[in-house]
Image (tube, rainbow, N blue to C red):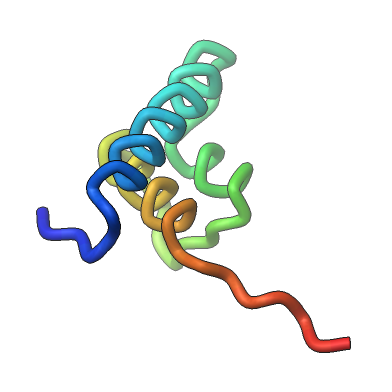
Length: 69
């Protein structure tokens, strides 16, 4: 899969996302639960952990703009 992020940043984000998903899985959660923890909503129920990891990593790499005062 092609990503437009810095490779080092992407690998760090993937590692963090995998670790977070592993903890959620261990506690009996689902991939959809993992997405909700990171504030990601999906129109359909996510049933694949690899998709959840990729979406979480993508959100970690995406620069977010702060709210205007």
